[in-house]
Image 1 (cartoon, one colour):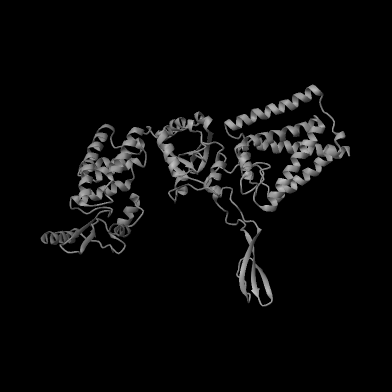
Image 2 (cartoon, one colour):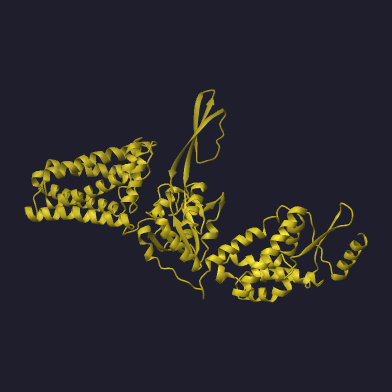
Length: 557
């Protein structure tokens, strides 16, 4: 009995210390698990939910300290009976989870070791047996240290646990066991290997026949049974491969931007799973950090499970220079145990992860010769909105207003160019770099600025295809063949019939290759349909043919 008690003592003590320490490393994560248990869908104890974090800290420290007390033989009677009370409670909880299927992971070892409900229950039954042995044979549990040293070890462990809990609560878990740890590539984490096992389901089909109800079991195929179908029950008999990351998406107004944003060279995410619970006094610091990131050419986004109204209000109140995207709340809680927290990614790989208390430790690099001019970027973003204000709602009145706006915009852009040169990617960011191009494209100043646009495109300050579009418009204005086939014309000859054509191109046989090299994603034929409609069929015209058409149109005026 002495040896059995000794083995049980070491096993139970070490297991409680390990289990408690893993959860103590991430008490916020354990509190989320407790909230799941307290929810209406499980135990229906919602009045405990506000105290989930406090309960989680108490429970995990208790686990560690009881493990230490057992190993050193401190207050044996109190220790073993406390362990018994804990394991009886946990065994009942895991039995409930396993039998109901309402909680698929008990959280016994946090995110370090995932156990199914029945595995958790089995583990607790084994521990229950071992602890009962300890209760029965507690006279064999001898003290390792004297009273003074024993007190020091126990009280020291309590103090160490409290300090450690305080640290991880105000920073992040010291060891990250989750799928979103630093160094993880999110897209790779979402992928499924080609030879990965697939889930197998068993279907029990019930039919009403002349001989009574009959059940036919298949792995998915509809059975051939002479009778009336009543219902079917499905059971998973073999789990399929589940990638480490399987619930991650970034959406805005119903559009999925995950793949696009995971390709960003430098992406900074501000993660706040619930904007009602977020630490709002931190956002002046968030603004400082994110503005600095934008100046250093980072793409900055917010990620939250809160609604659009709350996110817009937060952005407005704190004058934030980024917008929020929607992501599942559980996913955001898993990514970072901080509300808000910050992630830095490079092409989908997590490089840095920071609690809001550690924002000063973020390291942001700048690969460009200059930082973004945020004030200029804001002004140009406003100009771009004005440039497009009436173009989608054409009428004579609105067109007149748009022409007035275009004239004012051109004066502003000309002043900026005189001061800064072309305001391209390195000065105002990739998206805003096209603003000056749009304004010039919609003006009569193309001849003046076409060379500058070409130089900016060659320097990769704006997409080369934009220079191609402006060059085509410039050539068409001079009655010359265009290069890339981006420009077309439409005329009415005093009849409802419309004459439309793509302006002649200099190299019709090579135009699609030239378009591809310039960065266009479509062919000249596809571009013609985009301009004139799906029923339009592109035909190459030379300048003589177009001049004949124009002369005919002029004669009909």
